[in-house]
Image (cartoon, rainbow, N blue to C red; front, top):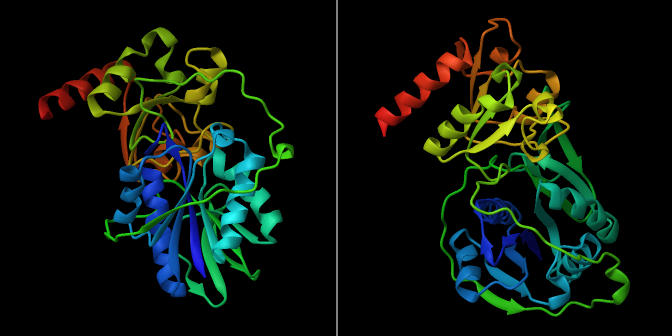
Amino acid sequence: MSVLVFTENWDGKFKKISFELVSYASKIAEMLNVQTVALSIGDVQEDELKKLGNYAADKIISVNNDKLKNLDNQAYASVIAQVAEKEGAKVVIIAHNNTGKALAPRLSVKLKAGLGAGVSKLPSSVEPFTIFKKVYSGKAYSNLVIKSDIKILTLSQNSFEFEENVKSPSIESFEPALSDDLFKTTVSNVQKQTGKILLTDAEIVVSGGRGMRSGDNWSPIEELAELLGAATACSRPVSDEGWRPHEEHTGQTGKIIAPNLYIAAGISGAIQHLAGISSSKCIVAINTDKDAPIFEAADYGIIGDTAKVLPDFIQAVKELK
């Protein structure tokens, strides 16, 4: 009996979300009085695997197979299901990101498991198993009861406050059964972005909207982001106009993020945009329109022209540093 957590690695290194997942899984394991088992797929060295033990993993299972070098949802789902069955997992925890959203439904079918997507808190009860989640783009909340024997949960990023709880986990290698039928997608080329903070991993995000007036006016956004160690983002109209790349588009139809600090410069706050950033811990809005919807969601609001406010903002940050 266990709680299984699938941890993602990037070039053999774990990022914050993996530690958040393990810590969350360990708390559920305590509630169920079972072990926490962390699964890693890929070429990850032992010293890196041991880091999962800092967040209360009791056991770590490492799957290192050349066929799994590139993410294939069908193959990965098969591996996770095999490990879940081997470890008698009653709950499987996955990140609520693009990878998790693709894997969770497949696992749900394979394991005949109920699925709770986008949870942000620990279950309020394990008998019956009841989870709390946002619905209607964060405008309401629900308590979802999962009655199946096995449960699958996807955890929203940056939603669970975690801390170190050091254990000395055992590390096991596992060789899954991998038929050729699982690999129907061929990856011919991989291009990785380097030297830039990934939007979905960033704890601080500086975002711009049409109030920036032009893509040529983006230097203050980039300078402020660099000073704060932040990622840059934009609203959908900005990416549609070609001012910024589409991978920076945040909102219901773009990337849904939950940073500790979200700075929105010249963004009015359409409902689709707010749905994608509503889980941010603190929202700072800059806009000339005092009635802009973004101010209803903001913790701090500055009514003013971004061309005048941002330089002062940047100067203030420099002075503080």
